[in-house]
Image 1 (cartoon, rainbow, N blue to C red):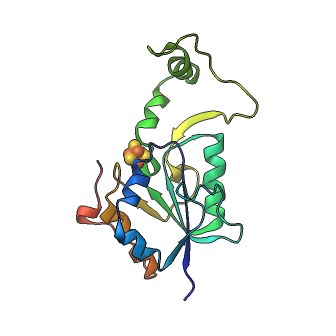
Image 2: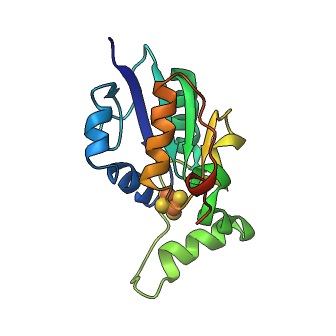
Length: 179
Ligand code: SF4
């Protein structure tokens, strides 16, 4: 039987969600009998295959113009899109920046931090532009929301196992947490 193709990417994220995915340990190895990981932060391939994948996984907050492109490309190329973790589901800690003027936030980050000496705010046409921080579902349709900071390895395993069985997972009990 052909393996189910899975792609993943992160937006503005701390990598904790990917660590949780790896925390599936030997269960991840067992899953690899049934799934093929294509583009992911683990394989370091940046774009989902043009022919598409069955499952796309996004962690992190949509925080800049490049994140928007990444989210839209993933949506176009996957059948089922999972928002993994509180940042992707709700916007997460990154949305605290929305309470401040963007220039103020950039100045604080690049110029005023106590450890910075002669800092400057990066500026180049090649750099993506910061936007108001938002969850993935404010940019594209999301099929499965998996909250948690990060979600547990058990919850991630449950979601992937249900999808492999052709079911949209319903998160309850210990699999549904918000911390
Ligand atoms: S949800 Fe938590 S663990 Fe996941 S990327 Fe955001 S801050 Fe990191």
